Image (cartoon, rainbow, N blue to C red; front, side):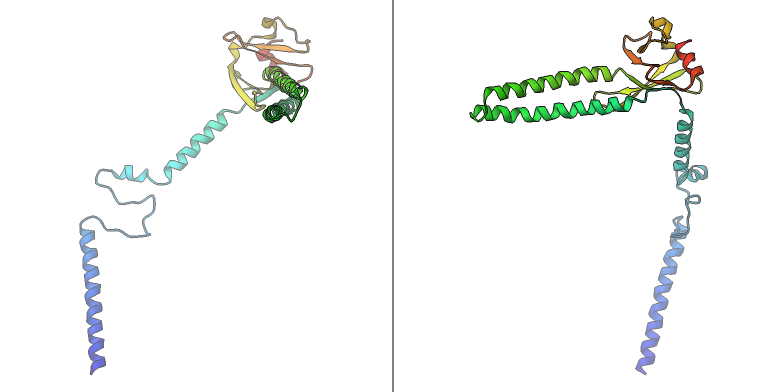
Length: 232
């Protein structure tokens, strides 16, 4: 008797629980908030009260696709053709960074030398030698960087042949690109130089800044495009 009574009570409780869940789902669906977890994709979503179905369809994975297309169009539109290169620019970059390292080492060594001199552990001649070495390294660094920063490593021309991309070194020995309108770049004849000269100036009409390149040590990759910018 007791097992049958227990079984009947269990079935009644299960029916009441299922009926309660079913009733709550019906009420929630009737209020417009029915949710099917895991079955709604990004393209089909329930309409929000303040949005139209068209606005709903533009949510989800469409934004990353648009961003990727924009990025691809930007990269494809900026394809430059190399017209000049200087193979020795890597050597100049190495020398520039070596001068930075030398100046940093001498700057680190100098304070301990002064401290030891104040304590009477080193003579004045050693202090003078260390100071002179540090000053010489600083002057050489400034001179070398002033020269290396004005050497053109590479030049590129865009497909429309209206923008010249010039690559040169920075003070830290890194590459820096500048973009110049071709109409603003002086031809070799305008600068007063000759193509046969070892060092040729790259000057602009709108700026007094002067860069240098060499057709003797460098290599003209595209002669027609090079003459388009700098003349014959």
